[in-house]
Image (tube, rainbow, N blue to C red; front, side, top):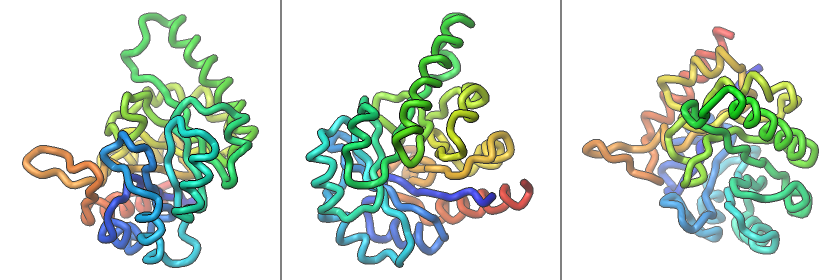
Length: 231
């Protein structure tokens, strides 16, 4: 199975063009105003005029009310909604577009004991079951203060205990890069991957959040393609 690719946190026309030229499947736009990658819905509508048919467009929200999400999705004309906050399954069902719900997973060193690790797996398993029943897919991301785009990976070991609950309708995110994507595909064969900070520009050692690097995008897509061939 070919791994689908989404580039998230797009804010510029040249980055959208690069993603399309590289052959990605989905484009992500952040409608969370506290994010450095935030973009206005009407700006996304303009950007999407550059996209060809059959490209999926995704609006990312964090703890916005239903009316706000539906309004922004309508203004921007994105095809899907991605939720990264504390939204309930009932809220997901109330939205106008297909929903991908982020499940925030902890880091390796977040556990003080084996029992706390097992408790976390139990809690996350219930979340996956709840949201998988009402959403188009669930997305696994690290539990970071910025609600995504942190460049940090969660404890991948947890996936061994919860992937059987997803029915293959899941997305791998959180700290993905050109360096680790081949390992991720070899270990878990994800149907979809979502990357943001891993394909952003770095100037004088500082990550330029919201500004993608064309070469990194192409190299990431190539790495995914090569890993799929090996699989």
